[in-house]
Length: 128
Image: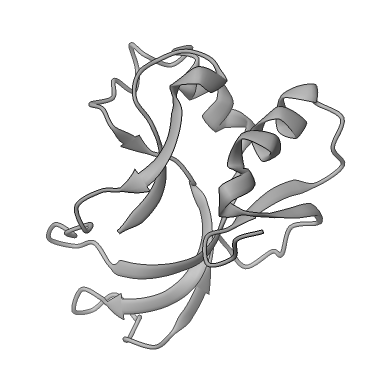
């Protein structure tokens, strides 16, 4: 799979994009084909290591906690079926700007300014 990921704790220099092994869900997890992923301010803090003791990472760590996409495989009894469209929750967030995946560093830079009204979205299918 193609993914944005961090290679360690730090600033923008630890961000990378490239091929990683396909995600394999464990018992009770769904597999989602991600169509868009949002750059979340909490992830910036996680990347910087602020939650390192509570949420230790192994690297590389895929970013993009806020996602939308289509269910590929779902655990029995979950209420989801393959083909279901999903997003991070029932409330749709205000989107400030959408970036293609190859402009991920720019999306992170905008997010780090703290001057956005809504979410910054990274479209993982688009390239500029």
